[in-house]
Length: 449
Image 1 (cartoon, rainbow, N blue to C red):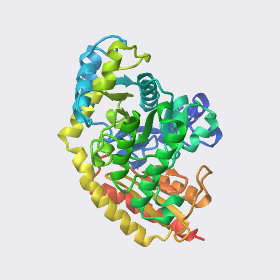
Image 2 (tube, rainbow, N blue to C red):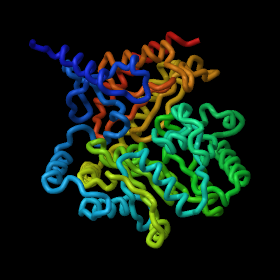
Image 3 (tube, helix red, strand yellow):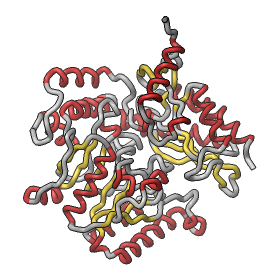
Image 4 (cartoon, rainbow, N blue to C red):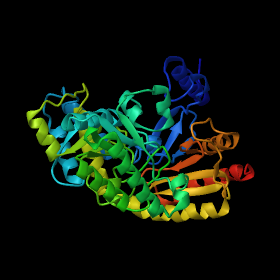
């Protein structure tokens, strides 16, 4: 029997739905794109339809799809050595550790490698607790740190709810969400940031600062809504607070790292040095799985004499480390970090124009090539077009369907539309995606209260 392209597309979807499970979804409701190939900022389904990848897949394919330099590095390393167990030393492992020590803010550092971001978060918390001898980790309510058990507990994102009670040693604090937090209704954004730090200081006193191992925050909030404080003073005061109490500062740069915000790492916008940094996603741009926990020399030296009770079969995977080195070389050769900063300024202007033409576009937030649009029923009340932790309302579902139908692939979550393209995107390709979003927002304009 001869299959045409459409039959092949249906076959792929049917095969995956019959024999695999999809994450974060009721299986009977999933309608996946049967993707077969990708290049640059585009990918194609099995029927030959082209999509503009406006979310870099899962906010991770920063260098774009199919870069031949990375593919060549993978091939060369695979021909030599694909895997060595984590107790062995390999040149890609050592060279990548050295490169990350140079790239990340602060002095000399050492890195513990994992398979991905969630495992890196798990191990960052483990390292902090082992090093300090304390138990508690402070995180934010509107955060996401991964889907494994402790990482999901640490995240405040509603995906944690099915996992609860989770681990018992997570303490959550409030977010710098100037558009919605009640705190900011009564003061300027800068003043609201300082109120949050004052509240955190009080929380630490109530928890007993001697019981708190670390504060874990995203360098720049990601899938929960791309939120950031209005002033660097927020992070600087936080750093002072942690130092005063002997609390470690862990910065999750899984999504916000590797040029996404126009800096190598989002924390560089604030002039603060963390004690631990968690990396993944853009580290290899999704070409192979890899995560990392970068720790300062004080923490590393502690484990010279004390056992690091942590280990993973695929930790420091040889092929993945070689891939990361090649990926970092692409960032440097093509000046992608600087490019994201430059294009980000243009993107902000384009989004502001979009906001002027669409009354349902309540807020735009972000920096670099890391933006979100917040869709509302009423600009005055800021009522969201779709509520937090609820299924998409008909207007938001229609927007998501319109984007997909017209070849733009991006995240539509609650009342949020994400604009997080690969850092290699050209301005005309940005305009291509924004033009479709412009048309889609007519749906929410008509649905306003």
